[in-house]
Amino acid sequence: MTTYVLTYDLNKEETSDDYKPLIDELKRLKAHRYQFSAWLINLNNTAKEAHDHFKGLMDKNDALWVSELTKTSHYSGAKAGTTKWLEDNPPAR
Image (cartoon, rainbow, N blue to C red; front, side, top):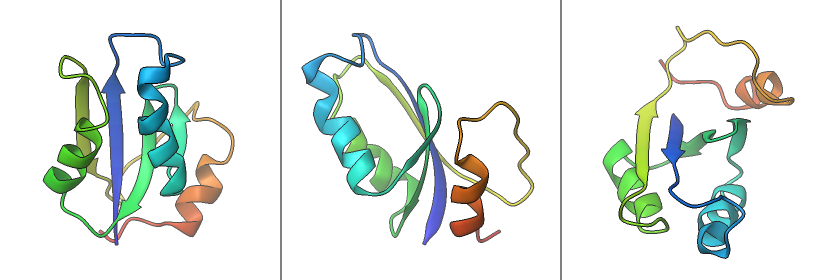
């Protein structure tokens, strides 16, 4: 599996029912929200495949970025549970 960082900018409030399928899918796949519009997720897909899948759950004018996470990353101020999620789902490289 590959660990990805998935970030987005939504043009409507996230609480809008329009984004319920997106958030539900991220939760179903056991993604971890580490900032308001940023998630960590493990997938058996390429970044493009992941992008195309999640983009299909968003409005056309929303922004989406999917990028592989590496072991050389560093963070601060992440939401609770981020360190544990990364310990349980370490990046491969």
